[in-house]
Image (cartoon, rainbow, N blue to C red; front, side, top):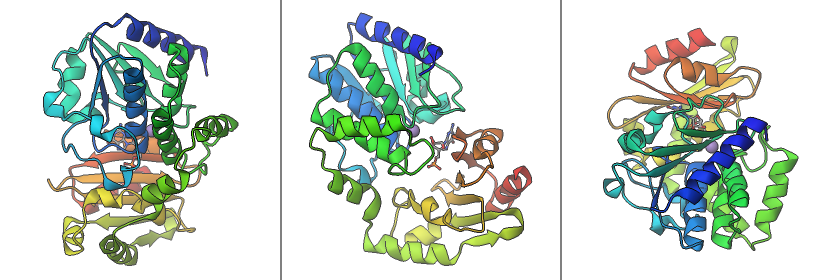
Length: 323
Ligand code: 5GP
Ligand code: MN
């Protein structure tokens, strides 16, 4: 942990301890395991101390089914009931303020805004920015915050931190998997965690219909060996023919990036409104965060994304040019 991270964490602790009202927590739109896990961990930890907080994320207010093993999902509040002017607001895994979607105005009006994150591309939109690009997950930052607040872990908090950790390290496989990560995993695992159940629901289980979609999608992948690039376009038509939703396809990029001939993998997901959500992965030296940032998105060096309002061909053109 660098001095800057430590200093900002101390400021965050001060702000949380000084607050005597309900603290407003928010994670990014279409939340993943780290966003939900890190937010719910602090939400439940505060509640264990008798502190009031409210936790939410933007519409579409739907938690993908594979996150059902997390703890405290029933303690989430719909964004329509979120405070418009929170005295203290905390964001989780949110790399830029637009990623708050419909909760963005609350962040703009918040008295104090603590940004807890680990994205190298974070735009530091808070009044207190705790950004640690060396942290494997935002959950790691939350663990440190809890230590400094003197709030002990509970099993439910541990479940959420563990989910955050395994989602963002690809189950201890990415380069973010440091000795610290295993130390934290060991501390969490001591809470008798449902490890096999979490692994299966998070990574190894799909509806049969989705497996059919995967089959079609994989058969339509395109390899461009000359640019070491592999891509897949997932359309609303494909989704509806297989009776699937976009959130089920969150892990599909992990299949595409298996192509040995390609250093960069990409999925272009057509959203209901026709825009294209682009997911990029690098398994080599290419920095996909730079490509995402150049297109209004962000992320990490090896995993990044952005939203395109061009069609698939034009979007691919932009990415190829950047490569
Ligand atoms: P994914 O491809 O799984 O959606 O996202 C990969 C990484 O890039 C995640 O860390 C995610 O937070 C980040 N990311 C994806 N889309 C965007 C975006 O539109 N803006 C920003 N700032 N980050 C994004
Ligand atoms: Mn994360």
